[in-house]
Length: 154
Image (cartoon, rainbow, N blue to C red):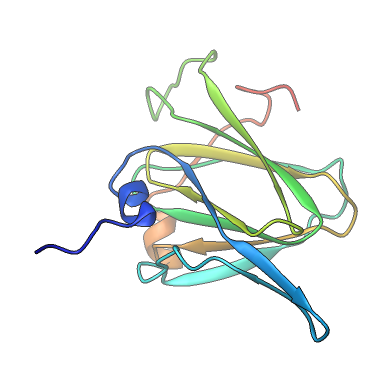
């Protein structure tokens, strides 16, 4: 008999971005946040971004093949995603998906290849950890940049 498919396996076989939700536990010793259904075995690296202020927008970065996982470790962020219809000259009016992630909730936003992303911190001193399925060199070979005002009114 085959093993049941987990929620995470369903997510990563899709070409859609998805929130992976964990939980938290508190007791006299403190609090632990966990996400047990997140397989990061494809991740080759991670980095932490701490924007200079809430007015700073980091957009648009896009990758045809590279996968990303976003996890807020302090504060909160608005993350906006869209799927470019043409990588060299995309339409200016594409639908977008908007997510709010906070450090107080155990959530990871999984973004498969094929998306452009942009984000903005919603609180001072916010920090976001980004896991990537590509090395820096591989990522640079799959990197597309667009003007931050192209698809979304920040």
